[in-house]
Amino acid sequence: MDNTTITDLPKRITDLIRFKNLGHNLSIDMSFEIVPVNFVHKSHEFQAYIFLCKYSGTANDKTFFFRKCYARGCPHNLCPHVSQAVLIANRYLIRDYKKLIDAGIAIKERLFTLEDMVVKYEELEQEKNADKSGILTINDYINIANEGNNVEIQIDLETIPAVEHFVNQKNEQTFLMADFTITTLGRKSQFQRCFACFQTDQEAIEKPVAMNIANERLKLLFKEFDQAKIQYQACFFN
Image 1 (spheres, helix red, strand yellow):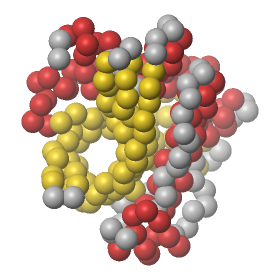
Image 2 (cartoon, rainbow, N blue to C red):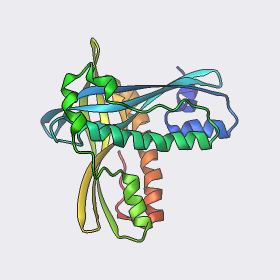
Image 3 (cartoon, one colour):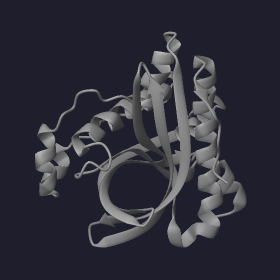
């Protein structure tokens, strides 16, 4: 694949919208997976499940593929419960659907479901009855700020190695994650969001691309923070 192709092919939702606005031909397919992943964070190993959507298709007759992580869920309270994570993932996914539809891009809307996974991962069965109240995304805090409330956000960026477990296959991935500590309405909340990832054994080639994608996503988020007058310190992967 030449450098022009690598640069021009869509790698995120914003790229798909840009291609459409430029009048290019787009064909998009989507597939969903909830993948068990072993993470290593500050020498601490734990397993979580990541909610992936794989976008593939053609852009001006050139094949593209990228994937986006919409949430991460843990069975052992190290991050949101898996049953909570599926709701968080779907909220972010619905926002992306709206962006694509508003741009005139035809897609078949589907959502993540735990029912698809309990057959493969029986331990998720107990998560179906977990507490689903109080589930907020970063966009909820932006709305809280837009309503005139004071919102302060501390952001810590991390590069976290992990191993994804597919059927008969393991895949070493490195995730570019952001930890958000949010103080508003007398409460402090914390959650994580993945901004990009790359195949660990292809770091020299894929890391610069992943970092650029992550930083562009951060720029869009920080623009929303500025508009809502959220107090934060901008930071980027380097």
